[in-house]
Amino acid sequence: MKILVTGAAGFIGFHTAQRLLARGDEVVGIDNLNDYYDVALKQARVAELEKHAGFRFQHLDFADRDGMAALFARERFPRVIHLGAQAGVRYSLKNPHAYVDSNLVGFTNILEGCRHHDVEHLTYASSSSVYGLNTEMPFSVHHNVDHPISLYAASKKANELMAHTYSHLYGLPTTGLRFFTVYGPWGRPDMALFLFTRAILEGRPIDVFNNGDMERDFTYIDDIVEGVVRTADLTATPNPDWSGAHPDPSSSSAPYRLYNIGNNRPVRLLRMIEVLEDALGRKAQKNLLPLQAGDVRKTCADIDALHDAVGFAPSTPLETGIPRFVAWYRAHYGV
Image 1 (spheres, helix red, strand yellow):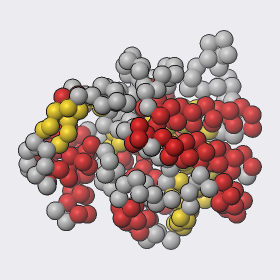
Image 2 (cartoon, one colour):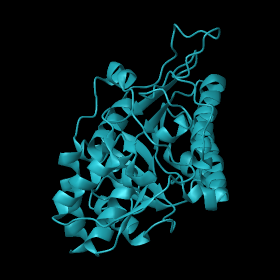
Image 3 (tube, helix red, strand yellow):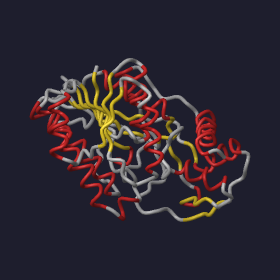
Image 4 (tube, helix red, strand yellow):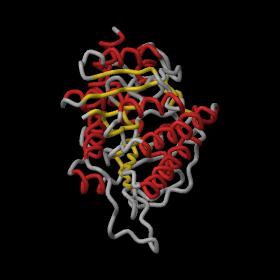
């Protein structure tokens, strides 16, 4: 099957494309290779993908309306896995227009391409950030999520609403995936694990927010990809039991579904640092700081809906995943 993967030079897009290629799919990957973080890392990911005969890369911004329309018309994709976005909670406080251009305008272009060219199923990345001010744990796709605390989170919530509109109006099957703190080899340099690893190896202190009193549902990249591929293979369908009198946010009378993909095992930030120290064989110097705007103290994913739908639940512990990341980092950067 020919599948469009957006954000193919990104962390999750790269790994998802690799998985699809390994099982024999043809993958067309697009990315704008922006400089939000190290472009050389993105180019290195693309170079790895281009080793596969079934992969084709196009340097294209999905916010480019004409370019996307031409791509959809030319390729006629049966499926689309939309993993490209302007990511980052903190960056959204400084550069809000980047999120509007990519996550709103760009997502509209994806939806329009799917609508006009008979795409069978659109699977797209949402985020655990949509839970915002919610405090009931674990976070469930059945909970209301109307109180985001960053523009990034608001843009991801908007994606879910936009997808539902297209599912309802045009019968486009859509599945949104709320990812929880993804980490692993080829990870993003703006994420804590990458930042901490670099700083510790360079002998610099690490910034530990909320004085370390934070918990995250760290989810290893292989588990994320397994969830992405399984849900992409399960075309969204209407929920026959859905009721407008008591609307369940996770499904609809339209072909629309939402799932959390998380490890369902929150880990204290200080414990994550301990595991990283063990893997590196070095101690961290900690610069304790207050909670940053846009951050939440704890995340935890309810993954019952995911397990019920596709028979899968992430299970890789931090003690396994972090040493794999460290091994990749040392090999890739020669340190």
